[in-house]
Length: 588
Image 1 (tube, one colour):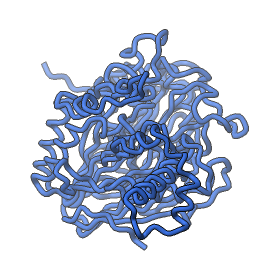
Image 2 (image 1 turned 180 degrees about the vertical axis):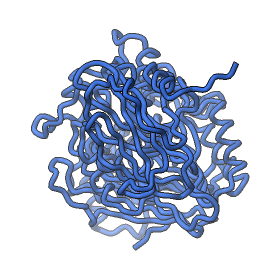
Image 3 (image 1 turned 180 degrees about the horizontal axis):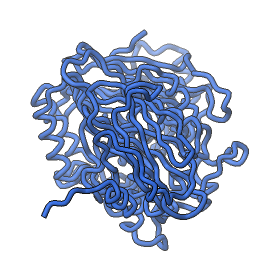
């Protein structure tokens, strides 16, 4: 027999963790006195909204109780900042079973509208947040901020602060590495002590409690709180929400003695859903995260999981190198990297994406995902780190001079011949062999290591002549690529954001600042489809879509080692792609 769920039942179910997100349909009456057994608490971790729909949005907060026990939290959503026009209200009980997080699916809202929201517990009231629902019908423009890779001990989150200064964002698209799992003193922690940003817990994240503690620390950051309160987030995880270079059944940073990886992954994903304003596919499902958002007839944004759900283990160049001769098993590598059985998305997600793209109606089709899709092949001598980029440029130029001399080129100048004679000894047989190696992908963790599924996606977009835009993070550097299929046809564009605080190639290559512009130019020259690279600066990008074009603006900060920062406008860059053309052009 059907039974009406009373407000008391509703609160009881919330306390038992029945719903990951409590559904709020409308205005709820005041609490009755018998429910007032709540533990006193306060709001220390900010508020957030996310996963907007045309009639709903997820609202989030976390309370810090004075002692263990149930905490009753109420919420209000209004169409005005003064909360005189309430739209939906309600209350729920949270407790330690959900790490005292509060997650509301506020429904019954109007499309394309701004709303204000806040939470209350006892005599405490949270700050006021602003959010926005998805629009319907004809939409003239959409502006998204895109960011990724925020490593707490590496520096201050000035990039979040800079993004919060934008007043016309429809949403923030966060492409992952929202947290990092490393222990204190680990990756990019050189300045953590002096900045007061040593991680909590001090150990590497392995358990549910560990991940919850790290999320809690991140959410104490004032700049992160400010951005969350100002604009809804649309998020997807990358690898560090679990462990470095995560794949389906393991990770580079999951080692012997660290327990069952499946248990660790489950804990990490549970904490992610607790601490971020994301709507689950269905209650209790913390693994499927791919989903779509439509901004009227202008933009369809499809968020993908290229990490946790189905990814095969990354290939490793070391497995194709002969340790004795140093030769590279190129044919075997090519067969493996292009194998039709090799998967990044998994069949279920891939079929969902294909079907969604084929039926999509938005002017722009945007893939929000973690890793570079553009072909980023570098000379093998560079990709295998046997030569630096400056070494390759110098020795390559010298080899060309030698070849011209051997061919008795009459255009060789006396100065060129003198330079060749002075440096001829550098062209050893080993160096010449390295220079003759083909170009190979520099990062097998990216789509370059999963070539078949990339071709399936590009082929799907090509079959419908879609205006395809891929957005990416992960590398900690900014890029712009034209996306070409195996036939050499350009079928889309890719814009990739730098990091919030994690160091990029300038860190790994140990590049002095004065060498970075020349190195950026050299990489753009070496990679055929690459149109822009920034190897030094921390930042984010904004994408502005209209019916005619998509524009990407890269924004950078001049430091993350001081809260006294400025926008690094001299390093900023803008580019666009016109509808139907798949060509990236700079905006001067």
